[in-house]
Length: 144
Image 1: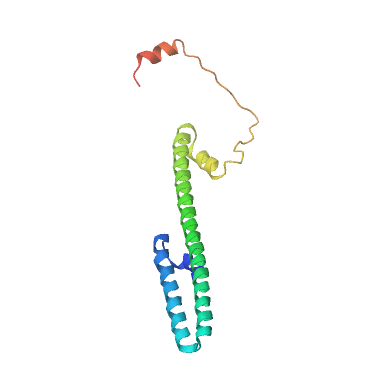
Image 2 (image 1 turned 90 degrees about the vertical axis):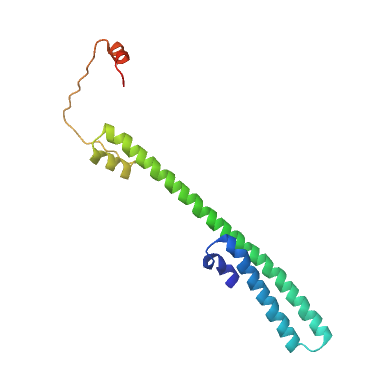
């Protein structure tokens, strides 16, 4: 159980391997001491050693599963951080562009809920079309 909790306990994946191998070594030492103290006959010792080796193999597999789990957890955190950063930059860029075209109270409404319609009902509206003569020629003469 402690091995499977280790991704939440150990802060970085790079430190997981040492932590898990320490647990494995501790298991091995305790098991060997217990065998030497408790098991008396050679046949029983053989079976006890075999059990320890099988336990070490399973512990190794669980260690690797826990380490991979931690790696995927770190990778998911990195990806979500990068996506949040990109989203923030996109929102800032969108805000800057929209503030040139719309009043700021409209921009915040658009960015907070982009799926909502922001139009308001107006009974009458006037539209003014303006045509500037020789606009293209005037633009070419002026500097930006």
